[in-house]
Length: 409
Image 1 (cartoon, rainbow, N blue to C red):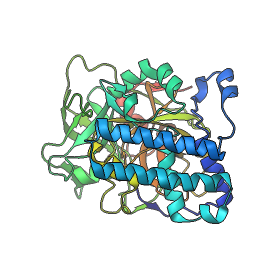
Image 2 (cartoon, one colour):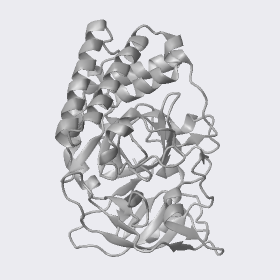
Image 3 (spheres, one colour):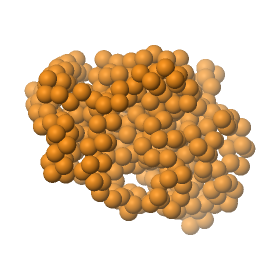
Image 4 (cartoon, helix red, strand yellow):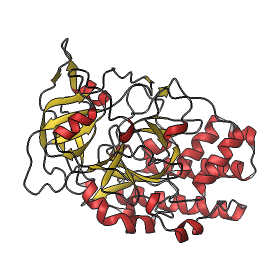
C-alpha cells in the first residue's frame, strides 16, 4: 500500500540532493554485524562526472532491455518505457551533479531520480526463485557481496513469507503475510479490512477462501504449503484509512491459519529490541508487490515496466532512513522509514535486518511517493504493549500464548 500521509512535509532541494547522492553511492548497509573494514570501504560520494553519468545510464538501459527481453515478454512498449527511464534519468543525474536546486524541485526530475535509483542497482528489487534472489531479474549494483553473505539465512526467511490470496479480488491477492509461529501469520490491519469485515462485537467475518500461500514465484513454483485462514487472533484497535496514513494507528494483525506440512521449516523469530533501526541500518524487504490501488497516483514508469510481475515474491535491499526515536512528526515512536524499492505496495512485507536475516524486525505498512519517496514499517519491539481491539490483551501476550520466539539483542 502506498498513500499520502498527514505527517509529510516537503524536503528542501539541498536535502534532496544529499538524499539522492547517498542512494547513488550504492552503499549496501550491513546492519549491526557488518565488519569495520567493510564500513571503511563504503564510497562516501557517487561519481557524477559527465562520463560516469553516461556510463551509468548506458548500463541501466542495457540491463533494462535485457530484463524486458528475458523476463517481461519482449514487448515493444516496455522497451520504450525502459528508454524513457534512461533519458529522464540522465537529465536528473546531471541535476544532482550540478546541485541544480531549481531543477531538483521539479516533479518530473524527482520522479526520474526515483526510477533511476531503483533500476541502476542502487536500490534493486529481485524476483525470488526457489527461495533465493534471482539476480538476473534486477541490476545488482553493489549488493552482490551482501546477498552472498545473507544467502543461507535468507532462504529460511523467504520460506516464511506468504501471499494473502483472495479469489474475489481484482488481483487475486491483497498483501503479504509473515509466518511467525506454528499456524500463525502476521499482516497489516488494512489488509484484513479488505479480506474481512469487522462485526459489532469487534470480531471479524472473513471472505470465503482466504488463504496464505508461501510461494507464488515468478516463472518458478506457483503454489506450496497453501493454508486457509481460520480466524483473527489480534487486531490493532483503530481502523486504517487507506487514503490518509496515520502513524498513530497500529497497522498490524495476527491470523490463525490451518496446519501445514511437516516440512514447513522454522517460523521467523521476532526481534523485540526497540532500537535496532538506527539510521543507515541495512534491511531486506520481503513480500509481494501489487497494484498501487484506486487511491494511488498514476503508475510510475517503474510500475509500468514491472506490472506483469505484480503478485510474485520479491526481495529488495535498502537502508533505514529515520530512527524510531527521532521521527519528530509521529505521535508514536514505533515507525521507521526505509528506502528499499517496494514498487506498488508490499503491504505486510517482512523487514529483515541484514546480517540477522532469519529474524523479522518489522512489518512494512505504507509509504510516500515523493519529497523524497520513503516507506514505513512498524518496529515490533515498540508495539508489544498495544491491546487487541476485542480482548484487550496485549500483542506481547498474544504472541507468547502462541510460543512465538523472541530475540532481544
